[in-house]
Image 1 (cartoon, helix red, strand yellow):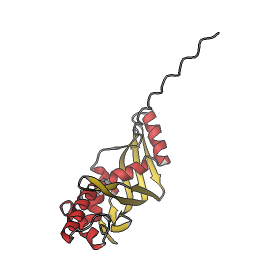
Image 2: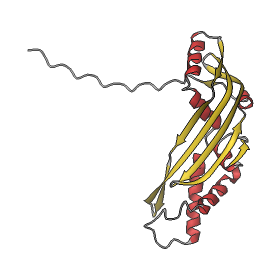
Image 3: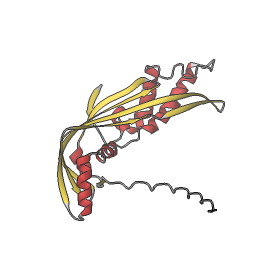
Amino acid sequence: MTTAPVIEPLTVRTLLLGAEGQAPDALADALHARGAVTGALPDVRGLTSAADRAVERELANVVNGFLDLDLVSLVASGWSKYQALKEAALRTRRYPGSEEVVALATHSITSAHHPSVDLLVDGARAATVGVDLTVRFRITGLVAVVRDGLLTAVRSGQCAVEAGLAVRGIAVASRKGELDLPATLRLREPIDLLPLRPPAPPTAPAPPLPPAH
């Protein structure tokens, strides 16, 4: 597993596979090198090596789409559950114009995703391929600025990030990196720490009571 600075755009794809345009080919090569597609269609006979490679390339294109996840958004999703930041967001939203500086202890955030891909033969599903993506952040020395319920700035902090991708339970890519949170968040919109919850579905009316006798 290598370690490298995360380049723009700050996505899981660029962390794991490098430049955006090279990602599908790199992923197809990784699937082939690790045999992650071998035997994925056990009931289909007579597939040539060229057909196998075609399946790998198509699967790589689909899985590549799953990797278009913004790293800062994943961190922000974890922070929205962090009690100290939520409390600061509630207080500053209660008093518009107020601001709080919150120092957080070293903490970790894990974001796990488990999509799947159906493989079709002659229009019928022949197999389902499971994909497992895990992104872990370890953040130290974070000093966050919260204003009006929004995370508006990060004044210091280091963020180590590690991502791993498995297809059919076979590890095909993993990489570590460093995310410069103060520089990154200066270039972005403030992060809402109190996102609105979707409204509760309407409840069915209670049945009428039977008439009294």
